[in-house]
Image (tube, rainbow, N blue to C red; front, side, top):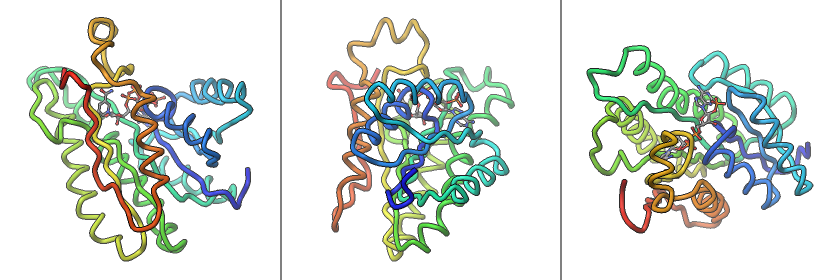
Length: 238
Ligand SMILES: NC(=O)c1ccc[n+]([C@@H]2O[C@H](COP(=O)([O-])OP(=O)(O)OC[C@H]3O[C@@H](n4cnc5c(N)ncnc54)[C@H](OP(=O)(O)O)[C@@H]3O)[C@@H](O)[C@H]2O)c1
């Protein structure tokens, strides 16, 4: 670990968009800290990057647990990392009608997508303020722009996060902290069933396309902030 290098903390980096973003940040020379529940997948990511003579720093974390986020953040700091950017990417859904969603499923979605992101923001915020700035990137969703069925809990979590971060953005401008919402449309990841992916892969975005935009948004310096970036497949929503 290079303590002087700015570090990027990505949650949900064991697959999909988070994994692609971790690779892309590593390729542009960032110190990358990766979290998710499946340590074995984070190790696989590290092994894949080793083929490019690159690597990541693994800190397993369940973002749905406030205590686990706090412990993980303390460990990251005590290992000497200086977090310059948090990418709140960890997320889950359940494509079900409201009446079929169990309370447990709804709890999981809200605690991962909304509270998980808030726990991570609360952890890094005092340090970013002390460091004189930073970047918080949330992976939002097109559900914040358009109404979809079979997405009630997911929409509540993402719209809740949008409300939280829109308000936060105005509070933290004065600390030189940028808050960026990346708003992807349908992307080919494990979030979708095998059948949907097989049938629609051609008209969906790829995790690598989203990752390139995340890294691009982070690298913009000076006075420009891309506060919200909507990314859609050419053929429109699924
Ligand atoms: N795919 C799309 O069409 C799409 C569109 C718009 C927005 N998004 C958003 O993009 C983000 C990434 O999703 P994806 O599409 O890349 O799906 P994915 O491949 O299923 O990735 C989800 C990631 O979140 C992690 N995760 C889930 N629960 C977690 C928890 N409690 N603690 C820590 N990590 C957790 C998973 O890792 P572990 O299971 O190892 O914990 C995994 O790495 C999500 O926020 C999603 O809402 C996706």
